[in-house]
Length: 145
Image 1 (cartoon, rainbow, N blue to C red):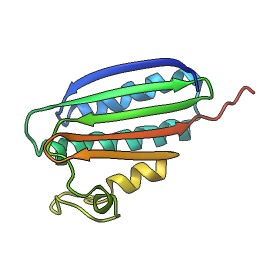
Image 2: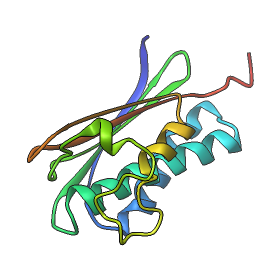
Image 3: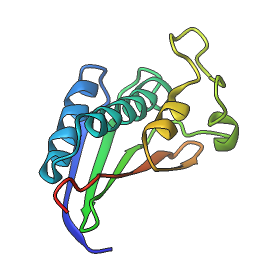
Image 4: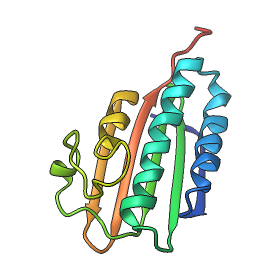
């Protein structure tokens, strides 16, 4: 499907940037007039992906989070959140609800489950020592067709 707009951004992997990234993605999505529920879903999924990068990818160390957004002519929003952190040893295991490598955290083990619940498609690619990328797809309803 043809891309009608795209955007790439990079942010330091700091907890305070999670809200900034979430707001930037919501603002980008606004150009196709999503419903309040769709914006809420997008914000929740992005929040989880960014938090995973900060908490698990960099384990509170320095790094960057790359955000790539693409909107296609069929109103599909593609969101890619990438880091160059420690990576995930077993992606399939990590995507199981309640599995976590940080059991002391609140809501530990629910990040990927939340991302799956709020998007139409979720792909996770990771390599130990090289980082992780999470690509989410969200179909935005067309209220004007």
